[in-house]
Length: 268
Length: 201
Image (cartoon, rainbow over all chains, first blue to last red):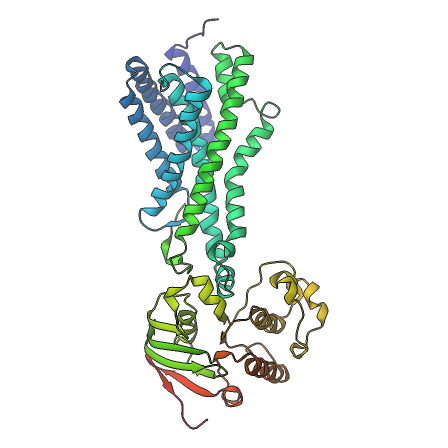
């Protein structure tokens, strides 16, 4: 089965619908017209650009180009994790902890999946490596950002409790155990919910795309299962590392709670 | 005999505090609010970064992990915190018998924290600390929320426990009457120094 290519002018038809929606918004003073148009333009431009990049990448299949793209994806995700925390660690720590956790978990799980499970030739073949890493990073990013945000926010609001527990001679990890558990859970919940709802409430995007592109549903389903399981593993280990590194940094070598290491970002 | 030594301790605006306490000593510290009384206790419990040395007998503060120091040198803050639903969960299972001098029935251990009054919380916070057998007790206004009768009752209970366990106590107090009743020595924070108050004892 051949995929039906879409002509650009046909895409322009859908863009007209967006314009119509913006027009309605303007007429009814809903005030979303501007951000709608900006976001729609960004989608078109960003995706067109990444399409060009992927075309070039698939054509060359050089390892260092793939590694460079993977690095850029990682850094952008690291910046995003930092921006999504209302209170974050001061200095380079917020960026390093989030990025480090995503790097170790996403890259390990992606490489493992490529080498052991899928086995393309070579193992870094871009049509497998890049989409897989992208999905892994995207989900791990959400988990890491949610859990660190929750961790820092809870430590801030429950500082008196933590300090009272320290006063009674509890080790820092014990004084923080409930907060760490909750932070871990909020990072993992989206993945767990997505797995529970898959196929019943929602048809996952990747599987849908593969079916549209002509894959037999049975193959698409197998890939979807693989992706969901590995995403959950990547998110889980990434969140685990981010929470344990992040909480360690909130205490110093004397096990004192150091809230001076947190900064509050406004207008988020 | 246990000895707690503060050697040139500086924290916040307070500078160069030298103090030596023996088992059974109760040192009362007073001073205007904001003068750094609580921060002094926090530094001794090693909860805030500070300069100078603190030692309990031969043990230097920095030579043992923070939580092991604080197991020996325990602070009871002015506003005690409770993090489990039931009172009893904050105590070890074998420590759930309350001294009668607290004026609380034994079934208090099965109550939920939300039904405690602030005075009850304060008394239970002291009992919670004592149940963990510290050697030094740092009390931040331990009777602030209590009426006069209860204040006397808690004072007497504390004096008895301190004597029986040979505890070293630093006690932040406002009320000069209380200081005269409990203190073996009295210090006042004046500007950036801790100065002995003569005459009361």
